[in-house]
Length: 132
Image (cartoon, rainbow, N blue to C red; front, side, top):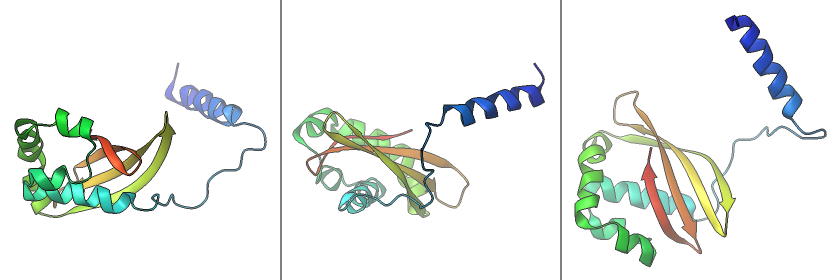
């Protein structure tokens, strides 16, 4: 199948898959109250290599799962680029089984490198933190 035909099929599928009466989103998504501050605190803790700061908003499960060694692995990959600056852009959130899954685009340092930051929260506490 040619690229042009493939594009036509994908376009038709995308148009045909929208539910009747669906209203396309026109405004940029806004973070849920309090979630941006938590996300920034966690990124700043990685940047500062502060294990205690990283766990400030963590629930008991995350505290038991991320030990100092695992935290240092995260820092070894991201602290240096974060020290050069970063940009955190809220993408959206998903509600899932009593949690809120926050999705952020993280642009690192002075490069064009980007990552997807995923933070899962329940009742104001962080259950999971991952950079993809």
